[in-house]
Image (cartoon, rainbow, N blue to C red):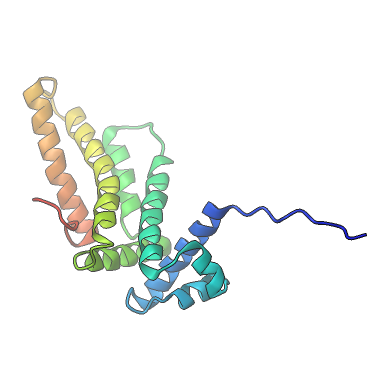
Length: 188
């Protein structure tokens, strides 16, 4: 009598995230042009056939990897303590975006590669814009709160509008300092 075994349960989203992390390691080492599905499969310890089960093309894999990176950074920022002053919270967020350690330097290198490619690649451009917004908008909110808490006269609607305007301007300046460029397709 043959003993039947239960099929192995696979967390497909986790497997996709593993591939996205492998993409980042390959892109950091080889650049976007040097990245291939085979190199990503090798980096992840997968066969190319297994990788193709999850992603049909390099473009599809790159778009997913970019989105995953934005989520990873957003989760890291979300884990920051909500206590303290508005300025202290802002400093903590900015520190998470700066390339202050190996992992964040790798993120910065890969992010810049994606941003550069997004200016000419219509499949990456919308996703790069979405990820940029995903990271930029919380930064604007924290800058707005820091400005609002730092100065009197921010209780009127005009004061709040001015604080939001200053925050957007400062967030853009901070983003440009961190990224070295403006996001793709962004109106000044």
